[in-house]
Image 1 (cartoon, helix red, strand yellow):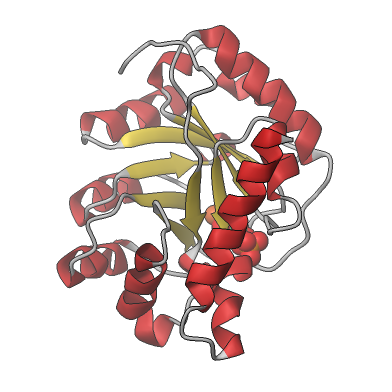
Image 2 (image 1 turned 120 degrees about the vertical axis):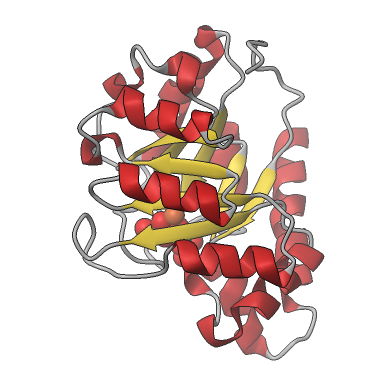
Amino acid sequence: MTASRHNASRFFRIAPSILSADFARLGEEVDNVLAAGADIVHFDVMDNHYVPNLTIGPMVCKALRDHGVTAPIDVHLMVKPVDQLIGDFIDAGASIITFHPEASEHVDRSLQLIRDGGCQAGLVFNPATPLSYLDYVMDKLDMVLLMSVNPGFGGQAFIPQTLAKLRETRAKLDASGYDIRLEVDGGVKVDNIAEVAAAGADTFVAGSAIFKARRTGDPHAYDTVIRELREALAQGVQG
Ligand SMILES: O=C(CO)[C@H](O)[C@H](O)COP(=O)(O)O
Ligand SMILES: [Fe+2]
């Protein structure tokens, strides 16, 4: 892991959450958002235990790899416990694995398991989870993910208090001297992404904002919304 200091040259990444994709055509949906300019695939794993919803597991991650997806797959584990599934997702071709620290008995060990498996590791913070979980493990992190909704469902409204938490997290990451990405997840849209970036995020999960565009019937709908997200980011940087 490079211990280079975060700097303003970090690039923004758009991460469509496939939670809002058409699961009956998942491979095609992922191909389409990547062709439309998405950077990474955000893969939400829910276990009907840590969160009330139930989604997809390692077999689907492997199926996307077998389908030919080469882009980074960003696995967001909303499961408890976490360690068994960390191993399964490493084997299934995950690139980044994040988990909620309160769902692991041994946060340091779970992070090390991810790195030992050749993946990038991250911690996820719910809106009310304290950032103190970052203390003592900063050297084992490639990503911090702040939830801007309560986890479990797509299509919820962005919680405005996340902006202050993003600023606080960005300051901690910059002070750490490590090169750690700051991702935000939940309710990110064209009309708020610039404000979210200004607060310190560099990686933006967007599920419903991107995939709902297909309902317009426009074959270029994903290109349009991803371009609008990038334009809003660029205008935010200029302004
Ligand atoms: O982790 C998640 C929910 O727990 C999803 O990634 C998130 O909700 C994205 O969906 P949307 O952009 O529609 O809010
Ligand atoms: Fe997510």
